[in-house]
Length: 130
Image (cartoon, rainbow, N blue to C red; front, side):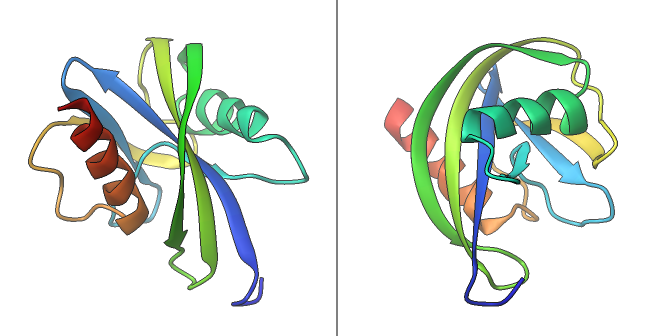
C-alpha cells in the first residue's frame, strides 16, 4: 500500500469488571485492542467477527456488539487509518489465536507499549464512563 492510501479497521473493547482486554500481535512489542483491518469490501461488523472469532480469540463468542465511535489514527507504516471501535459482550475463553502472542486484561495504568490508536480509544472510553 502507498503512504497516501487509507486503512480501514475495527477495534473491540471487551471488559472484564474494570479491566480491558488487550492483545499483543505475534512478532510485535506493543499491545493493542483486538481487531484488525477490514478487507475485500466486507462490513465492519463482519470484520469484527472474522478478526475476533477466527483470528485473534478463536474460543471467544460475541454475545452482543455495539458501535462506539470512529477514530482517526496513523498505522505503523504511516498510512492514515480510520478505526471503528465497538463494545462487545462475550463468552468463552480468551486464548490467543494464530495472530496473537499474548492476551491480557489490563487496568490502570495502561501498558507503556500500547499502540497510539488503542490508547486514544481506551482513554476516550474510560473518560466517558467516569
